[in-house]
Image 1 (cartoon, helix red, strand yellow):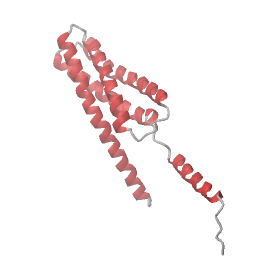
Image 2: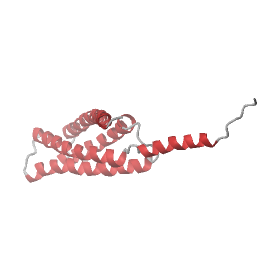
Image 3: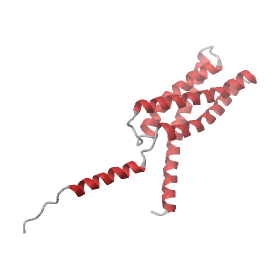
Image 4: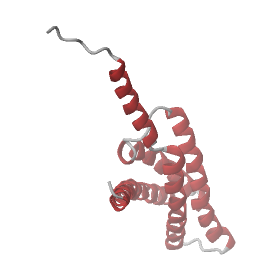
Amino acid sequence: MTEHGALRVRLDRLGREVAKFGAVGAVGTLVNFGVFNLVRHLTDLHVVRASVIATVVAIVFNYVGFRYFTYRDRDKSGRTKELTLFLLFSVVGLVIENGVLYAATYWFGWDGKLEANFFKFLGMGIATLFRFWSYRTWVFKALPAREAVAHAESFLEESDERPVARRAS
């Protein structure tokens, strides 16, 4: 395969990954906003507390979507480590997302319903960039190509070592 062809394959693969990540993220965003506005409408919780609850619900939804849709072909050997890293990076994203909302609400006094949704959305956008990078880099790691090649080569070496049956002439 030429260098140009290999680059094209990598870009196509990245494009599919971004599209799947975006699809799960879009539904997760709807879940996040739905829970956020429902909690704000039904309770007297402060805006950031309502947002944290909504973000936690969306994190659970997103893990299922990422593991079983976006990154279903990725390494599944270390689920405990994967879940731990996912939660760690999700909490960092939660802090980014809700930090923007906190600053807008408590530092600048922008606490109307429309303003809260706008700054929640802005925080989610910034946090999404961080999450995409961290999930694909640390959580849902691609199996290295070298391992696949080594496995294939070891299979070939095993077949070379087997004695060849001789035919009687």
